[in-house]
Amino acid sequence: MRIVFVLSGLEAGGAEKVVNILAHHRCARGDEVHVLAVNATSPSSYFAYEKAISVEALGGGTSLRALRTAERVLRLRTRLRALSPDLVISFLTKVNIMVVMATRGLGLRVILSERNNFNTQTMNWVWRLSRPLAARMADRLVMQTKAAAKSLPPELQGKAVIIPNPVTLQRGGVRAQSGGVRVLAVGRLDKQKGFDLLIDAFADVARRNPATTLTIFGEGPERGVLEEKVRHLGLQDRIRLPGTTKSPVEWIDAGDIFVLSSRFEGFPNVLLEAMSAGLASIAFDCPWGPSDIIDTPDVGMLLPAENVEQLAEAMNLLANDAALRQKIGSAGARTVAARYAPTTVLQQWDNVIAPPRTVAALSPTARMST
Figure 1 (cartoon, rainbow, N blue to C red):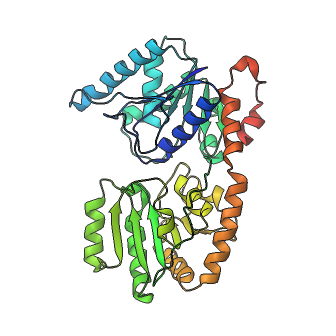
Figure 2 (cartoon, helix red, strand yellow):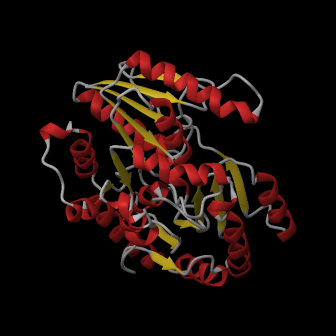
Figure 3 (cartoon, one colour):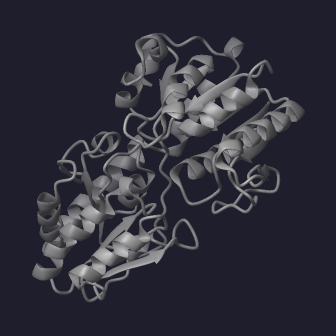
């Protein structure tokens, strides 16, 4: 089978990681695999690809925003027409819309995968109106949570299949012990990730636990705002924003407590990775994903969304109780390893990827519970 995966870029994001895992899995099964990044200007990828997988960057060209999307849709259509794949799988809302536009009339089988919360993510009215129209044109829709699937219009829910992200054990070795407890967060530096809320909460932790530090790995448009907040609070020696790590595993051993402070998510890969590495984890109960992963207090601490006071209390509690950190971290690691094992998740993808004639049709009940 010739499969084309389409995504936005080739950076250190959750969608990029899942595409990388899927591409290697299907390549190992004997498929011809192509990865097209519609906004990337270079095929260089944060997640390494084997030579057998073709990776292409379709970005660049005009600097006029009004023409950029049309140009990239045309470029994408040209490549898809030339490749004539058996299946196209796209990731992320805007890319999904572009893929539907690019494949119109080509007779290609298309699977769209939503990776973020399309109800709350920022997009202009054109994209927002186009999203459900594009979904109607797809053969299947891959959602990451039941809440995401139920947010679809009723007429589209029959196309939905729920597939969470796989977790791969990322721990590089024994976690180094330092003079104080290290709080860790990872993600793009934008408003969605709520790092401003985390910094506000950590100000209380810093006052009550003088040896505790916070490191936020990632890069993005909110760097200046976050750095100014750190300076305003006088916490330059306690909070670090070192940028994106050079490798996907580098951040795992840099902390003792992990915090997901997002205002909304699709399904947080980074929370799975932190828990799989045995990090005691705290997360806001934002839509969607954290409550699916931290479903009991034994495996992690799930807090009301955007509640800075409770986040400060949770960090203080874990900072002062090494035994509790160990207990929660160990339970979380066991849970996510069992629930989100790559073999299980990849089999779910294989079921969706299989040509319709070779797999029995799923009932609506089975689709919504997969």
